Amino acid sequence: MLFSRKIPWVVKYRPKKIDEIVNQEKAKKLFIEWIDTWVSKKPEKKSALLYGPPGSGKNSLVEAVARERGFELLEMNASDYRRASDIERIAKTSSRVRSLTNTRGKIVLLDEVDGISDAADLGALEAILKLVENTQYPVVLIANNPWSPKLWELRNRCLMIEFRRLTKTDVKKVLRSICASEKLVCDDDAVDYIAERSEGDLRSAINDLEAVGEGFGRVTLSAARALLRARDRDLETFNVVRKILVSRYAWQAKEASTQTDLAPNELIGWIHENLPKQAQDPEDLWRAYEALSRADVYFSRIFKSGNWDLLAYAVDMMTAGVALSIKNEQHKFKWVSYSPPETRRLAAEAKEANRVREDLAKIVATHLKCSTSTVKSDVIPLLKVIFDNNPEYAAKLALGLNLSDSMIIYLSENMGSQIVKHIEKLRQEIRQEARKTMFEQKKSRVSSSTAIAKQSEKKEEKNSKGLENFLKK
Image (cartoon, rainbow, N blue to C red; front, side):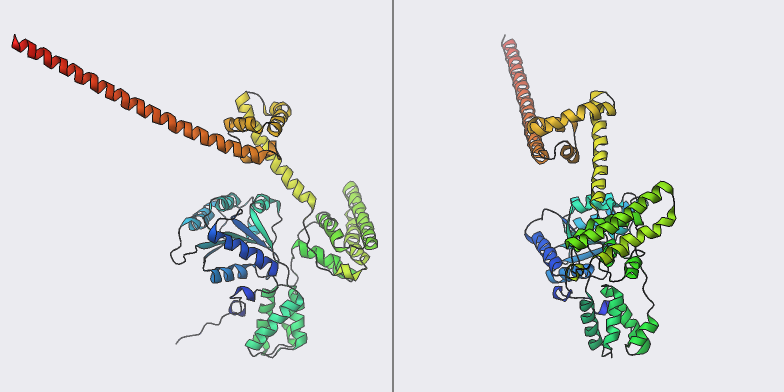
């Protein structure tokens, strides 16, 4: 007896075409333009990083583009392949082997790259960076939150494409379409409830709709409330900040602050960075910063005195205090693009710069036979002057010391690219000179062999003539 296997609705109604991806027009345009450049030539950035909240269509877009553009899709979940050897064996190998089924090539897809731990999964991120650098095909990375400091170098090498959280209207439209296709009776208030609690996650909304529909045979508000438990989950930091700033009530703002793994003293930095983008009315901004500054005072007292009872007051001021300060609803509920705190980016860049500085000091100290502290205090400042003012001589130094591109950029941000070009020119001249020398040596060996052969022939000829004269006598 054969049993028919039921297809989950989230798979059954997954977008098959690019046009079926809901409300991500900007992301679709950027991604399609980037993919199309691979047909004629390789783009400047050989990898794209698609990021945004769950259920916003990141994976669906990649699959739809691969299907419509004729690419073979090779997909792997980075959180399932955490060792560098796994990524190198599967992703790197597959990115170089020519596709047998599709003439346009492949798309290599790595999902959940933000799930890789830089401590537990040692070497995995380095393997992904090598893959991006050496790939012959488009590499697409997907993350919910790409702003972790561990992904700093990866972000710099990728085309960043943001997916926005879907609106309640977008989710409701898809849910009603599914109800019509399944001939399922759905009350408007029930669909509204499911869309509201999904918080823009279309995948979870479809799963909830299917659960209610199969459980009760009809989607009603009472059935939805009875079956679906309130979703209390961690949100991406961007969405936590947005929920705080657009909250109408104090309890909403305070509740949002509990839906993130960030410590309160870290969350206040995110609010501080994005507050001017949401509260554009001067009076709103003044009131909000008054509340935020009081929260900062409480944090200062907590760190000095160790009295953590003050934390509740700090959280109240940075969440409810800020949210209720924004009165202008025209700006309060306007969608704006948020960004991580500038201090995080600067800290990550400073950490990377220190690493490059240490490596550079070790190389120079080895050549000069001195300590790295002497190099950092006395030599590196002089090298920066040289690299800023004499790129040709700097290229010779960099080539002689075998400095990496990051070390060159560290020594001179303005002239770094020009120095790298000079180095490549010098390498070409060295290769040409080497080939010329090899040719001259080969020619010399041939000439010398010819001369020896001639001398040998003359000697043999002389010996033969001497023998003839002897016989004649």
